[in-house]
Image (cartoon, rainbow, N blue to C red):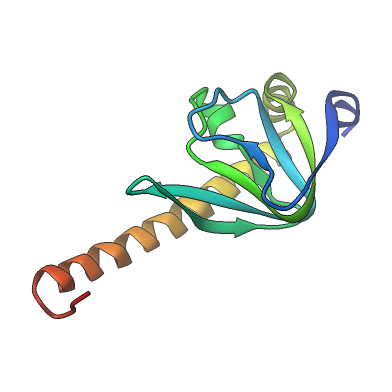
Length: 136
């Protein structure tokens, strides 16, 4: 926790402000201290809300851990206060604190399970559409 206190910064975002853009390099993770953020997905060149996260949620960790560009754009939904943790500090925290590493692994696993469930439902709906069981 001392590491976080010295290596993070508190930021406030107003409604609609972007915390990070899809495709950007992952230079930090965020913890939502108050408020909510929308995780935006792009479908057919239209940005839509994929899901909403609130207080005490961790975001951006996947890109930091995988050293990959951001997979989504994150926007404040109303006023949101977040703690910005640099990528170096975040990775050091994971290496040095097994409880936090386990929490992050559980969070990622839960998100993967939820995403898999949404994907399976979308596949089933598409199959019904293609078979003519449902129409637009």
